Amino acid sequence: MSNEQVNWLLKLIQPERSLASLPGGANFDQDAHAALLGLPAEVYAAELGRLQGEASEAASVLLANQAVGLMIDCLPLRNGANIVTFGDSLTSDPQSWAAILREMLKMRRGADKISMTISAVAAETTTHGLVRFGEIANAQPDWVIFLVGTNDARTQGPHPTKTLVHHEETARNIAELRQRVATETKARTIWITPPAANEAQVAAHWGLSRFGVRFRNEDLGRVAEIVRDGDAPVIDAFASLGSPPPSDLLMDDGLHLTLAGQKRMALEVIRGWSALK
Image (tube, rainbow, N blue to C red; front, side, top):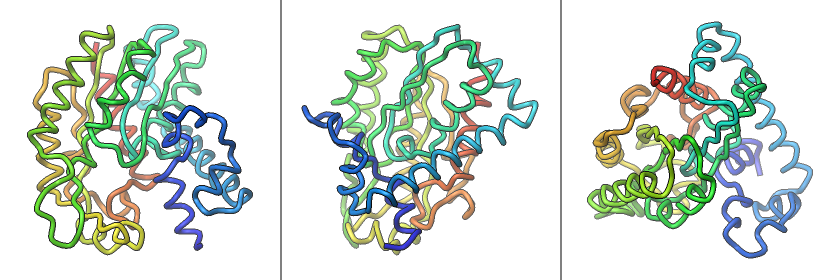
């Protein structure tokens, strides 16, 4: 397996998250995670460590900008605040915007003892999100940041006639998530629209094409519009990152974000969140 393929696997698939709902899921160690991905344990450990180290470095680079540091200072977070970030592979990525933001909070506001839980599972739709909502309710967070719906817009095969989740069902699912946050927690929320994709790269990618995965920005845009249609603050990644985003922000699969793309996403979140009271 090439270095590129190993990198892609680890950024997309986190066995510990996918297996978390199983009774014995927590008992799988890192060697087991490596085996599930078909990788030698030492290769898995080295690559995961590299990805995590680069995410921490990305946090340091962002904080080197004084204006960004001041925005982190302005985030409306009390001492001991509890944050949950909720989503799919765009959030579960070891180099995700959430992982970078968590590092930035540790570096800049460590004395405030702010905690962030990344509750995200690759390939999940908003329907899966409803099933997993108990993780949010159990955490009783101060803030929940949602980045969901990308996989609702996914299609399968060369001539698809439907998305995995119809946009009307996506709207109902997101409305239900909003309602459950409001009634089962005291959390404030921020919603991030799914970013656009490079449709041609998705269709041609060695990994995604193996499973017949396709995306159309028309469908992703429809999900983004549903996310915008609410009372909670929205970070509009679909609009701000471009359709499609520039090539340096996207991995070769045309869907997932490079480290530069995740840094950009983290900055968009920080900018929007720091403006709230």
